[in-house]
Image (cartoon, rainbow over the protein chains, first blue to last red):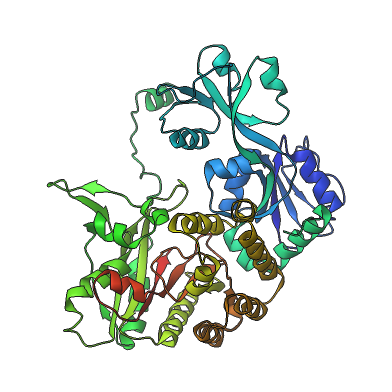
Length: 209
Length: 312
């Protein structure tokens, strides 16, 4: 099958590999710590690119990979020109606003630390607040603890990291799961191959689109 | 190391590159233009050149919110908002407005020039060289579709494009699927559909979402003919849709794909609309459709249709 799939390393990797195994798309598990960045499934001929979660969008929207697995958080943040084919259900978490108890989210001079500046800006615009956005790349929870920001906008699944740092969820923005996405041109040029993959994944998810 | 530090810290370089989305090219597009213009002139099309800048209001009046986000906007010396032309069809339709009673219909025009778009993604081209044709005052869809085929075949012969596929839909399909929606809901629905975010459509629009999911599932599994039957069973029998489908099939054979969830790039279409993808480019190579309603925005009412080819 002349297809390529971008697989995200990190949080979604294990669930993605398990789903592909269950759906019969791969026969042997892909290994996250493999030094090989392109893995070809010998039976089907499908190529898998092991990339950073955020880069999945780039590989798919630029047509280097036909398909990819990516969190809905990144799709909302980046709004890339791709098709969302399937909700894969795993990787569930919530995009939340969090901070110390009692933070006034309607303050006109609120400072927000986040990895998701577009989502944060849209959320506060609904409140008619133009926040000062401080873009961070990791450990966003540190922001309010050291006075860098008043609150954070980030994903949380169990809430444990927030709790351990004496932060609370101040508001929930959106629910997140992972999605199978496709390049637009690929869907049209390789419709039958992509349809086969979608069918296999759908049946293993027991999810009729 | 000193040279590099001078370059990064003091911004002292010998080379100034093009801004993101713009580039220098040495390919002679005029040669392609000459080949294509020879074909359209033999079919009675006349050349038109349009202004490089136009009033913001012209595009604001005709484009949806999604497209107006992609406009570059500048001010002239009298503080008037101007837009480097985003779409040449709009300019031509507007140009004909005051002259429509004085010209012999149908008016058949072609153009070649740059359009400027500011997409979200830094990867996309912001200056696009287009060759386009418009027929105003005729409802003969076959003429424009067969001309599209001739031009695409010429581009293949010139090795400008590879294999291609024409993906098309009809505005009545999306109108029927959004019947009863207010303007804001319709806009949200269409934007979610543009990326096929069916999960959000299901959550936000309930039953309508289920219908869309079913259509998408059938689109993936079935042939274009079967999808057409399914869609007509849902929206009602539309002769124009059936005829339009047959015309595309007759012209392009197996190179067509009917996608009932395809969202038009321009919101002024009111009939068949299409995009053409080619094997050697990630972005569509051409797009177009029927746009009678655009003429009404400029004070007259005529059948009109056209397309633009983005020269790679």
